[in-house]
Amino acid sequence: MLMSGHEIRELFLSFFEKRGHTRVKSASLVPEKDPTLLFVNAGMVPFKDVFLGVEKRPYTRAVSCQKCLRVSGKHNDLESVGFTSRHHTFFEMLGNFSFGDYFKKEAIEYAWEFVTQHLGIPQEKIYVSVFREDEEVFGIWRDHIGLSEERIWRMGEEDNFWQMGDTGPCGPSSEIYVDRGPDYEPERYLEIWNLVFMQYYRDERGKLTPLPKPNIDTGMGLERVASILQGTRTNFEIDLIRPLIGFGEELSGRSYGGDFETDGALRVIADHLRALTFAIGDGVLPSSAGRGYVIRRILRRAMRYGYKLGILEPFLYRGVDLVVDIMKEPYPELLQVKSFVKSVIRAEEERFVNTLRKGMPYAEEILQKAEEGVVPGNLLFNLYDTYGFPIDLFE
Image (cartoon, rainbow, N blue to C red):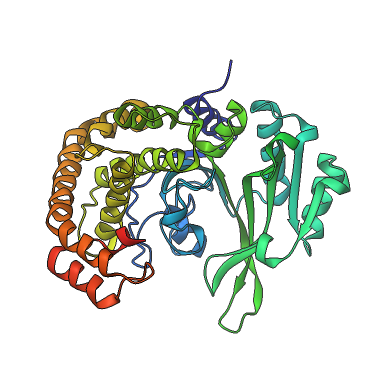
């Protein structure tokens, strides 16, 4: 019997709860105290002030499953979502955290026990990466856990040294990989868990000073782990997402698993439906600036791919029921906002359809005049300025 996404989530949370960690509910996708961030994009974000030492919590160990949204910057490019096997806008990040409590040895022991004994991943399929200068962690994996040296990869700062920003807490990391076998090339070795050992503070001159109390921050993508345990080629076929691809198949009359473009479009719709439901549920409304603009872009991109599949009328709002049905167990609050989310998405879809209808004749005229597929910038701006026609439709 394959483990479901919900079972994996609960297994992780209860595993760490039994080991003295306080279960912390997922924070909103809208960061509470961080104006530099559009959305919560990692499990550690709600604990940032604790790591910085400016906030004290009544516990020194925590475990969470955090809703995350990544749409730009180094972590994600919106345009690649749907056309790779692992990129998402919305995803869930499992994490265990220590605030000056346990450190490297215990963090590695917990991770090894959970992956091998509770997830049931065979030990011989596990490889790890370590920061090349971190002899302590190399030694823990080799001498304490018993991994052979060829299964411990020494990596440079770019891959295995984490920092919060140009200044602030930082430290080496160790990543856990699963060997899925030669059939899964080029993604044979899949990273599932990143353990960050926050032991230094980097100042303005780049100097590293040991922190008085080192911290642990780990992150494991739920969708990725589910993909391994459920034996799917990509994250999109897991039980938490596949029904949403089915929603797109039903509306378009196309089948998943046929050709690259159709599969990509169906994945875009499935992924973006999750992002829209959760973000709007957390109070982010489509608009022309900031967070709202990102949500508008996600919605319009999903509509655009629906259009490519022959879905010409508003349809995304109809998928909200399915998202809520799949995710209501861990996020019961979705039931209270479902009607609101549907009405917001429907209104935005109708607005976009009207925009397209008004601007389409002018857009076609521009395309006819375009030389060698290049559309002059001033004409594009005109189209956007006059009709609100999205420029990215010309890509």
